[in-house]
Image 1 (tube, rainbow, N blue to C red):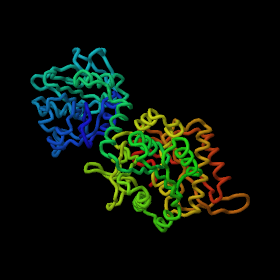
Image 2 (cartoon, rainbow, N blue to C red):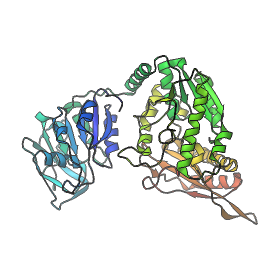
Image 3 (cartoon, one colour):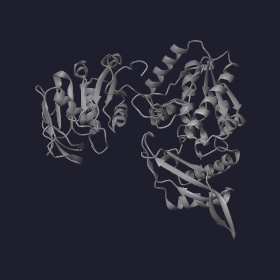
Image 4 (cartoon, helix red, strand yellow):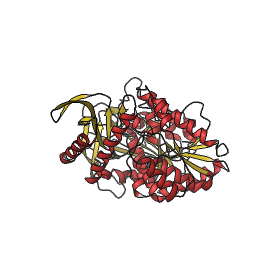
Length: 513
């Protein structure tokens, strides 16, 4: 976070699988939220000026050696704190309550008895179903706390000290398996934190436009435009802020889908009437990728070459100082931070060269994909752009598993076009997060007519997801799979086999590289 947002709720992450989900649920309540690590220095936390804290769950037991702790200062900031699962145990242990391993674990849906009309349960029924996932249990609340709910195995399933602004629940209100969980979160945000639900798409746009104008002044800006929803939304947002100071640069890397370059030029050069420079750089990208097979080297090579192209173009526009990118929050997480392992280097994050001459403007870096789409709709972007499935910045280079050649690009472009056509024909495009073809650089034996073939396979990948942080393979109808397979094998020369990837993320990733 570069500067405090008004009415920010920080999710303090204790290693929970649901930390991202908590932040998303808070945002769905129209309150800005961001994740910070549990060992964040207290002074840094204060500088972010939170209006509330949420202590996440986590896999540890407070009795384990080296288990993450809650900084005592968290409870003395003068802002409301909500502990969830491991968070309630930390709060109880730190403030003098009792946490025990009773042997009575609770996992899954559990009946909750609300004991009194506490803040978190305002206007909610006394009997509810909640989702539990814990081994340790709070058996005695700290002095000054009231026990506000219990279950058969948890005598302190919820507690609060209203005067101190401290609230906690053993269950997970952020998951859909707790039907009234959003109401509980809203009671914390609106009643305990006294926050109004004002973080809307309109407010995001207004704040971002103001910040861009303040930072940029009269300087020239260029934007790396791909035509996808992220870069398109970023471009229109920055254009709203600075108008003709912005020039969009569409780099045709030669790694795009069939017909994509023509579509981007048509849409932004004519429909939006924005300053647009079209750079045909296919030959130089393919030359740089010659002999490259390692996926990390691919991404970094492509990221560096993008910057070199932008730098060359910038000299035509009074040496533009700023570069706009459509970087999202998940890009930052996956590329690795101090507390998050690198899953893969996104070409626009970990793939950027160290000697880059630009200052970056990334107006979407705090947003998830669904939030970007909502901003795009608010800005008036057409539906075909807003709801276009995500496409990796390095393009088809990371969908060719091995060296990228012109022949392999042509094969993959044709196969991918068939996949998208059939998915749209089946009216599944909006239901899927992504659907695309992959070309592994191996060959297998096949039979066509009376002859033997030795050709490439195409792997079909289709997933469902909310934010790309996790994803599940899509259960496509068999007739759709059959049509795709038949068309690809019959229409794409050099392919004799189609396979379907049925792995989820984790343990796999959505893209293969």
